[in-house]
Image (cartoon, rainbow, N blue to C red; front, side):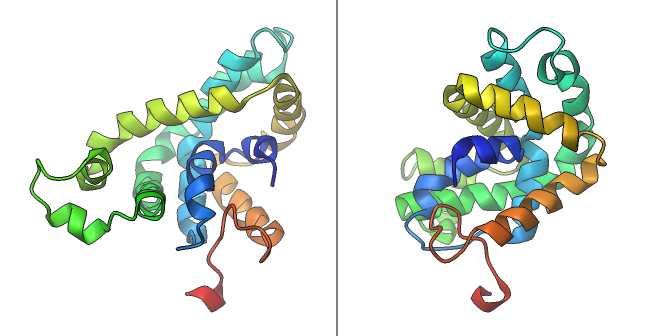
Length: 192
């Protein structure tokens, strides 16, 4: 699945973080956690798109003229979406590094590397790190054509209630991600 489709589907930050790790196929992402990660990252995706697309899109484009207002609709939902987003991030770290979550959480605070430290972080400690990293990663992946794709799709999706986006993206990715798509294995009833 191409990155710009993920961006357009508003789940780009964690999807781009998870892509290399999930390719190992060690674990799958729960659909509810993917929905939370989508809801959590939409404001980050819009911030990145606005910065990356400023020279590509017209000033009156949806992304540039209404993107901040669109992203603001998700801000009240981010706190509730954080636990699922954190689970996705921890799974990615486990898959990518082989660091065991239980061992990392029980290890002394000065033990291990950056990944173990990240896995021990709770709540608001980890959020600023994730926000900064995800925003940079997304901005680095947005190309001129991606700007045009986002600009085409977001006005069509904008009328939906903010509460529906996460579940919509999770459902769509669950439908289009088949056995051959190892980039983002989404848990199914059979895999639980």
